[in-house]
Image 1: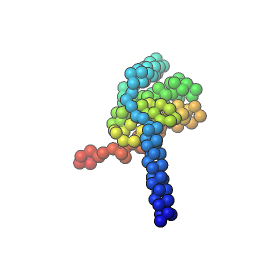
Image 2: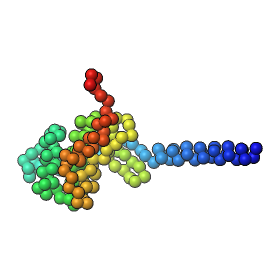
Image 3: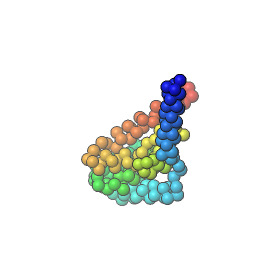
Image 4: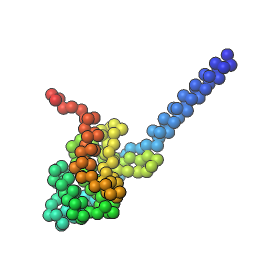
Length: 169
C-alpha cells in the first residue's frame, strides 16, 4: 500500500513538473504586433535600399518578386552592399520578407523568446514563423553566397505546404 501511494505521488509530481515546464515554455515566447518604432525602422530600411537601388542601378523596388529579387542580387553582385554591412543586409531581408508576406499571406510580428526580440513573419495564427531579416545577413557575414532567389525559394517552400488550397484546386 505504501509503495502504491508513493508511486501515485511520484506520478502526480512528475505530471505537475511537466505541466509547469510546458507553462514555462509558452511563457518564454511572446508574439506581439510591430510597434510604431518597429514599423518606422523597417520603413527606413526599405527607403535606404530603394534609394541605393535608384541611385546606383536606376531601378526601384515595386513589390514584384522577379524585379525585387533581381535588384537585391544586383546589389550584392556589384558589391553595392558588402558582406560586412549587416544593417543593409538586414534591410534586404525586409524587402524579401515583404514579398514573402504578400505571396504567402503572412504578417510581420515581434517574436520574443529567451534568446531575444526579433521581427518575424507569422503564417496566420499558427506557430509557423520565418525570420527574413536575417536570412541574407547571416549567410553573407560567414561567406555564404547563396543566390537571393534560392534563399527566397527555400523560405517560400517552408510555408507554402501549410496554405489552404483554393476552392476547386
